[in-house]
Image 1 (cartoon, protein in one colour):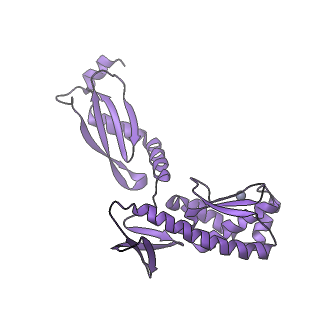
Image 2: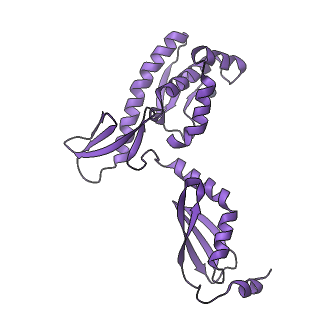
Image 3: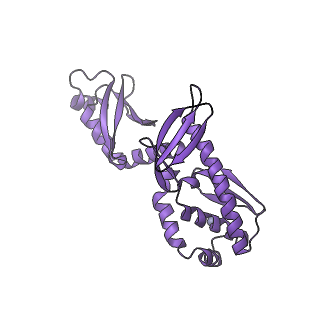
Length: 247
Ligand SMILES: [Zn+2]
């Protein structure tokens, strides 16, 4: 099909301008605007995902319904792109609510002398001082601190119980993993663990401590894990199903 033929099919009155369409991205149960950039020089269509928008460059003769059909065909690709974008940024604040130890808390803001956070019932109160406050940063620092305190306690408890010694541990920001163990017996944990239920945190702690004994995911490794976390398969499944909510 050459461009002249395309032109005959699609060229109708005044399409020669930038416009916005809405595409329903069912995966996220949301509609996303499609910004259409009309070009006069190109004869091909290009699609780009930026933040939460779909940007399309189209030749002036392409009609909206053709663009929407094309997006429909590219739905999986678009969903994957959006998923990647959302996993890169802080997605832990949603509709004014955040997770903490597997429970949802409503965020409330209060002006005060220092930046600090208090948890009362189902409310997480952020007291802040000054303008231009990055609330997500205050929250992340608080989560990291809480994560450090809890992990210190859980590592102490399980390493004693399992008779496994580790060298040290760090809190890190991983994109896809929850923890790691290196050959020097140094453990690392994703600070976003603190968003998850305590039983999941315990499973991750046991998992990483078991790597000190078995530096792989062999049968012996899982046998060791099951000795301290008999329901480890349930925890693994929970992580697989829910990880996108947290990291
Ligand atoms: Zn592992």
